[in-house]
Image: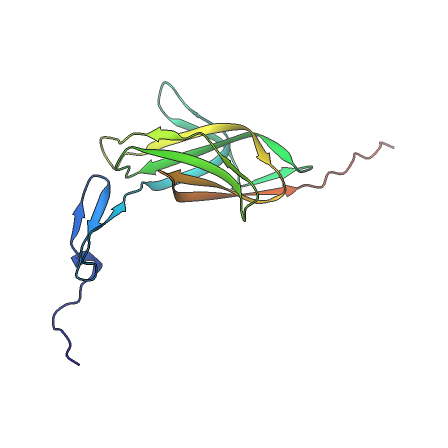
Length: 173
């Protein structure tokens, strides 16, 4: 068998063509062109009690971060819950949406989407977030917040809900 001489193609030697929000790829192995949609990079996704943006400074304020919720019984609603998200490399305007769901299925809730604009500098950090009053927890177990960009899942954050044992108070002697 005759082997071709010369270097074999590597990822860095393949011809990539950059467009504003897609990458086109064509090589000897893929004689046709196909587009790869660009998605932002998720720097942070934090579950917390409260989130707000200070109107004077523009700073995001996050308080009470957590990854577990305890409840005396299920179904339950968690009173204060917020999600903070930081993105970078936002190449084009898009829609970011959170889905809260039970891992393994059985429960899913879509939250209202955010319309995210393209910053002047792709290295800029785009911060979004919101508060959820009365987060529904139908049963104990593992849940997740899933971040979707234009319908494609790009990040997830896990949350565990468990039943805490509450003992009645003992009478004073």
